[in-house]
Length: 410
Ligand SMILES: *Cc1c(COP(=O)(O)O)cnc(C)c1O
Image (tube, rainbow, N blue to C red; front, side, top):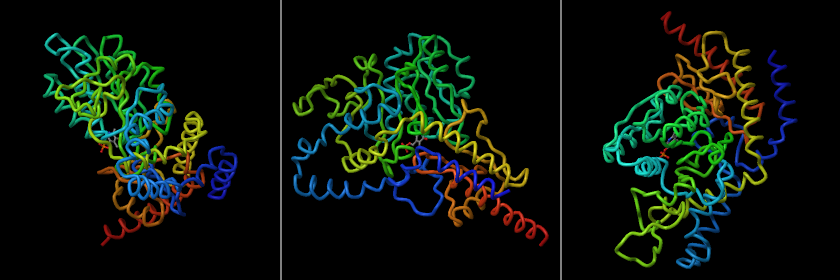
């Protein structure tokens, strides 16, 4: 039986059009299923960073702000991310963390929605959100005079009223891997005159987002997960073109000024998505991200999505075949339309099991108390990886089971 899954994996890898991209990454024999937390290093990045540091910084020094394109990096790299999330150029700037961009988007979004005293005084927040979004939204609501309404994203469309200013939603749930209905919920918000603010941390680089096509208002996302930008790589902010003229940033730093080097006391916002900039960009991280994004050259996000679904289907199938019934339970939706690019398995012994998986060369992660999380990054994970991960999981559970049994006996 194990042979047949291994053989199928081999055949699937041989037929896989994206398999050739794996060679672009610095990887070893470890099965790396944590690219949804920290994407792998594209192998050309170290040499590029050596040039950025020794020549651009070390030799050109201050001249690099112009001559090496440092000053315009936030919008240039934003334009490089844009096609991956279905946005036309000129709507994305890179910089700051996702947390900071959530703050900009929520406060600026409420300002677009109007004075809360005129009626739109509620911010709907994904009740299952990655915590930072919820913390920041709560503070933003206190600052702007709004009320937070936590809701399951599945119930949001039915809960939108003429009091809704905006909704802040995670496109893919970081814990379960559930993909939310971005087109449907965005349309429902618009129908009620509210705005849609999407967090793309777990969808950008894993599946088509279609920001422009679905009329999303504002969006944020990080770049160190599926976009492989490196630890703490700067995040991004999308401001739909139609909102840019009225986008009023709560953090109007000098980098978003119409004439930053005029150094004038009065603030005047730049045109366009540049309004999302704040202060001096973190150039080293930013240029590592820019280099890393080259792995996407010639890659269609639709092909990435197709492989992602095939990988997660195959992994689930192997888990069902190898793991004794009742030891793990998938909390990731079966339906493709509701699945992101990870599989989350509930498991009573999750902490010990994940530690042992990592020791045996299968790296996923743990979401306390009982979720084993396996991220599938189609550019560098293959079907043989999925088969091996499921097989090692079954072996670990078999040994955990016997040790738990013996300690109970004893
Ligand atoms: C990873 C992630 C973040 C991370 O925020 P940082 O400010 O980069 O730490 C935020 N939101 C979601 C939904 C995430 O998945």
